[in-house]
Image 1 (cartoon, rainbow, N blue to C red):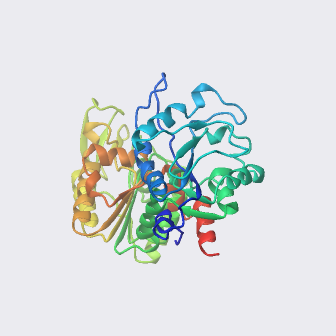
Image 2: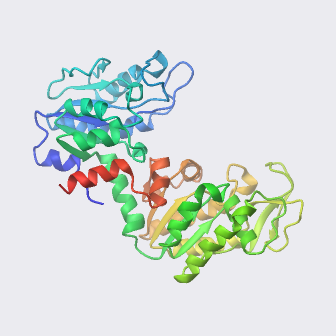
Image 3: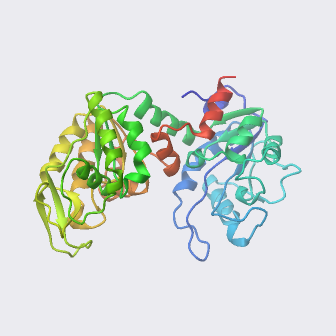
Length: 400
């Protein structure tokens, strides 16, 4: 994927004196009093803004916050607190502009924030009239919000079509580069891990990845449904028997290209979904009717680790067990360590999705993964093989 980047415009001197509108993702979690409880997204958004300011641009920042009703702005939905904190992180004033439609008074070297874009009528439906208003504000539009890239909205897709110049900010560019390396330009063997409770929520991803990978590792309830497809008894484990035929189709695609989905040889089972429940390691062919599979067993974990350690590229989305509970975390821990070891040896690894990022943090390998994706829904849709609207428009503009 090829897009114009903010860094290139800055290097080429094309930002000096220009009005630059940056679409950031500042949708930070807050407590009941409105205090920011996690500043990760704010800190990650600073480089794009700083790049534009240092290049002599007049900068406007646009973001959403929460899920407000279009046409209504309440104190809860306001970016006021976010703007104050961003100003502190940038080391400068960052006024919040509410009535921006008629234009914004911002001079080169200054930065302002526009009020919550999700409050603007026409934002979600990507209305042309609203997109034109955004475009009229700027000489250069920058999308640095990969987490919203799967949504064709006025502030992500519409304005990018209409702005004089449209480019990707450093966060967006890094995501595009990492995903391209992970799938479209992968170094083989390519191993993908897809975990989760339901095949139905990941079927498109599984089908798309089956066409590309050398090994497809599955975990959680997804694995249980594949075990059913393989003729195994799974007791009272979470599964979707109605999707057994779909799982067999995935297996057939893998087999047709010489790839495979490694099946477990042992599993960790318990009679109740609880960390305190009595549990045991069972042969995969010895799961009792009153037991449920909650993790892969040690032999299987070691087998998966060997596969991962020899990979050239690893795409990780989802744990292989209920890693939040200590008795069922070992499979994911062993896998995480193997991914880190493979990365240390030169493999390219990318992790994405809420549970995956939590596992990366829990097992202390964040600095040993090549890239951790910031975009949950966008990351998943990319793995599904979909063309992300906000990325697609940047590609199209770069090709003009």
